[in-house]
Length: 99
Image (tube, rainbow, N blue to C red):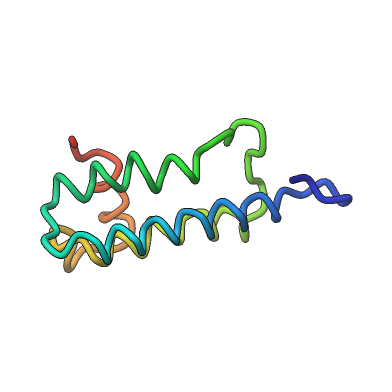
């Protein structure tokens, strides 16, 4: 979804909305939040929606990048293993943890 001014903001907005819906669904369905299970679900269901065709619409605007990171930032707050960590430490934990 490329706009006339050649920006991908519409595509980013759509991807983030879809990822947020799935993340909220995961958090509402799974009351027992085992770290490994939730991380595997996040990576396979939520993050895949954010990364779908990403090489094509590679975001260059800082506002788009921050918007794309928002579902991951929100999910990390709900992960008990990430309590007390800064955002960058939570990000490293989410991207390097084995699932």
